[in-house]
Amino acid sequence: MPMITLQVTDEEKEIIENYAKSHDMGVSEVLVEAFFEKLEVAYGLKVFEEFEADPDKTTYSPKEVAKMLGIENETE
Image (cartoon, rainbow, N blue to C red; front, side, top):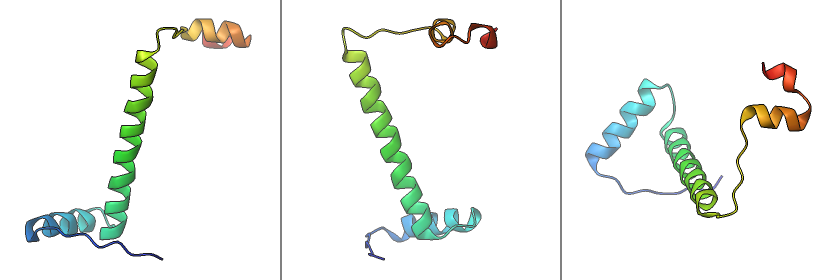
C-alpha cells in the first residue's frame, strides 16, 4: 500500500493521536476519514452552488414527486 508522509507540529501530532486512540482508530484511518469527509462536503457544496446558479432549476415538493411516481397514497 502506498504511503504518504505529513509534516505536523508536535502539538498536532498529539491531538491526532489522542483523537485516534479515543475513537479506537489508527492515525492513518483518522486522517483518511477526515480527508474524505472534507472532500464529500466540498463536493456537496459545489453541486449545491451549481444548482443555485442554474436559472432554469425546477424544484418539486415531496407530494408532487409522489404523484409523478404514482405513489401519492404512500406519503400521506
